[in-house]
Length: 115
Image (tube, rainbow, N blue to C red; front, top):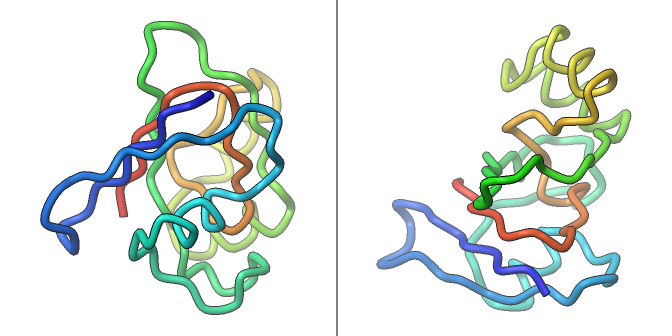
């Protein structure tokens, strides 16, 4: 299981929820299930409204989480990540800090999600 902590000025306090290991749900699905107010519009990775900053809360190397092609395009156009960050994530298998909640699959590691 993974602890996912959502943090935002929109909320009175941070909310930590548990994600089941092996579940292929997106971060947005997890937020919706627990009534966390992550903004979204299209839910398919094309609008970028669900961009969130994700930090790994462990003193170990993060699990490789590839960016979808939609994430690469949308986050780059929004100025959230650079071409260099995309290239580095592909060669080092380390995730960049910004992701789309509708595309990000929660892995078996504790994360902090800021939005």
